[in-house]
Image (tube, rainbow, N blue to C red; front, side):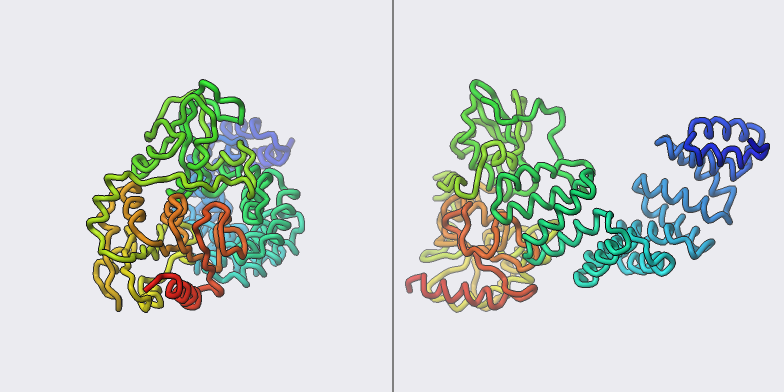
Length: 509
């Protein structure tokens, strides 16, 4: 070995002898504590072992302010820790010192995207590609941020460039699948998801999205099996399993057993899948859910107890029940399974106008990933309905949008009720007094459907949820639901005009 300690340690790292490299570096630092190159080597050796390397990398960056690699290494560690703002500062230093450092530009773009700086992220990824045209990861990352800003055609091209640069790179196949899926080309999307999964079985996004595609196509057996990937910790937003829970139910007999069913994701998901509680043949069935659902779910047949937390013998996630029960499109339970509390129905009926009444919901939770497409821009988008004679409109809108009904800013009087409703039991009582409900894809669509109330669901052209399937005007989940699909992205007028014509002829004057 050479007598140069820097070269010796570099050789150990190159040979993947990280522990020896760490020990040698620490010995040399005892003699030369201000040697930035030794601190950099120590940080790298620790990082490659999965140890905490932050202090060493910070010392290296401080002692070597003109060393682009030292700044880059610290940026990587900060990015791995989720400190994106600090990582951005380090990557900016790195590319200022060495503008041709493609990896630093790529990582800078990734951090900027995490912080919502999409225009700067796009420029950073383009800088990386200009330096290294065959940089597959940068092409993929550029495609992803272009999706964020809604430039889907450019995003598709970037993912194709990533595959051209590296045909074995799984992620862009999955992203192309997502883009195809988004615009309703679901069978083709499934092919891309399968290709991504074949290339990298450890990449959970491909299997999760494959599950959604298969569910959209009505292939429930394989679809729900793949949908179980939603709990995988490496997904961008994995579904959380209950903490300190007993064993997960796998379909075995529940005779004399107490099972807890955990609600997950949105309120609509919980309402949709609560129908399966009565089919478990268990000694006791509890549903663990958020408080706004407690009174509503206490009325469901087969549910013995509703709480936010329980102590059962085993548990299942509500949306896993179709898999455990072997549900197909043709075997979905379609009977009415939610009824309102009779006392509440009478109480709410007194607050509503006499005659025929249509409930309205036009906005959803803005945190929903597809809310920009599924929600209407405003209440006035429903204006084609105002010409229907002999009906009163009841606003069921809560949260975003309810101020429009309260302001009475439309050309037709609307009775605002949403702001007075405390929970879903109240909402069910109001819906019971209506003739029908017109709603976007929201929890109210599921509640009305579960009550067998006539419900007209407005569905977006982009990102339509799997449970509404493809092209159908009806739903196997809710026999009283009728689906009105947007025929072009961003254009609701023709869809709502079509619904208005139907209602005008369907509702007696």
